Length: 250
Ligand code: PGA
Image (cartoon, rainbow, N blue to C red; front, top):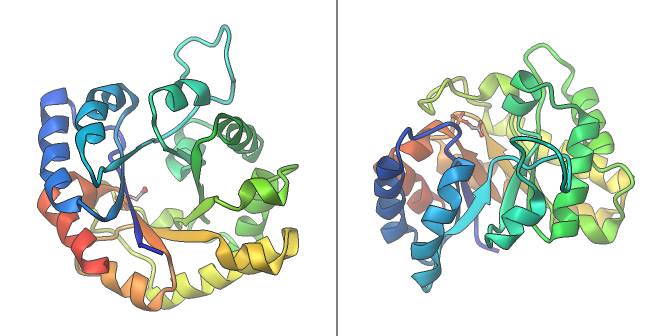
């Protein structure tokens, strides 16, 4: 299984021109690797065309999706609309959505169900705040987020462990989680999934780490943290740095 590298551009960059420059720079070197770019919604259809022309194409993901399927919900973007654009992945439950946009576990659960129904691949983010009990929080977020979702539907789920205290302020150089703490979180997540579903599913589910990943720490997470990939914010906005990360892990 190839390492999955996901770039979360968040609310960047400010112009389409910059988005294209960044995307093109990454595109060249990401060939043949499993890289997902999650730009702001409005850039998705505009970056789509060159993606489809590539043999080893970059994959596109969205950073969020509506809790609603369709109807009178001004400003929302649905899972079906993303699917129609041939967007493959969607990030759900990112801590910044939970923190700044009051997203609850119940909303996360509804979004996951909608995204599954639409056939999108899900990157389900979980993580504790500083000072919170990790076991309690991860268990609560997983159990509530996956409520009433049968095991067959979670087989292809990707979980991103992102301790909130480790997320950078935008430069990818914050207080990253140690590799040993990451490893213990991976084992904890597998245990929770195993209790909720079964051991086989827990062993097969993909787990990413995110939080101040940069080219000097990326390889260690894959080598000794037992994660299947990385979710990268700040460092994904610098094409050279991002490519260094991609090359360090595969
Ligand atoms: P960061 O962001 O790499 O800038 O810490 C990661 C994320 O929030 O997904």
